[in-house]
Image (tube, rainbow, N blue to C red; front, side, top):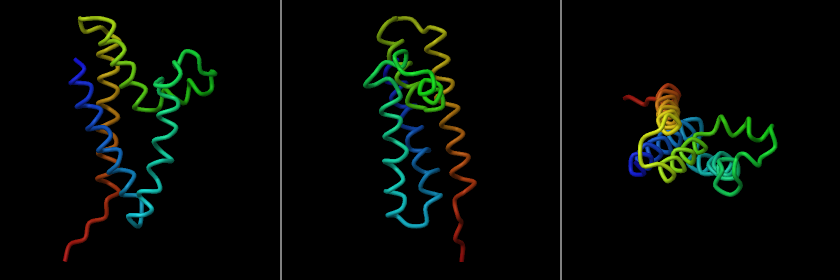
Length: 114
């Protein structure tokens, strides 16, 4: 179950990078965007501090971050040997993030055809 989470989270990260980089005008600008988008996820996803201990505003913001659902799914997989509803819910939401980022990235990508 952990491998499934890792693969889906990798695809979400790739599609997120595509979406963010398609908004940038230069490679340097794309590289500068990434810490601005990744650092809040690392702080609010529950890796450092459990989400339950975050203030209500930060907990609300963390509900909109894909890494939060990956962390929740890993916690469920470590806690239970069977697939639980929370695990499946986290996987479905994480997959929806990936599809959304992929669509957003493909819509904003500039095509250069001769």
